[in-house]
Image (cartoon, rainbow, N blue to C red; front, side):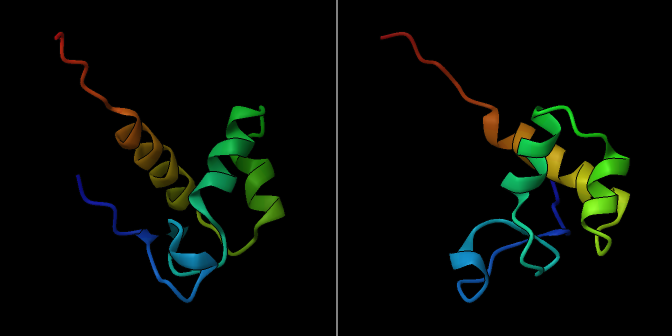
Length: 72
């Protein structure tokens, strides 16, 4: 999967996954959604974001959560 809106830069937020090189970590977006915020509410709070940024943050979080369990 390609995440062209998710960036990693050691000089920005210590290298955490951020949206398009801005100081907006993916974790902040995903946490707000988890607590019930709507896309519109997030966009109001972060006017530099675009709806596609939020969608990709969700997709990235879902990708990270994929895990395999191996029976021993």
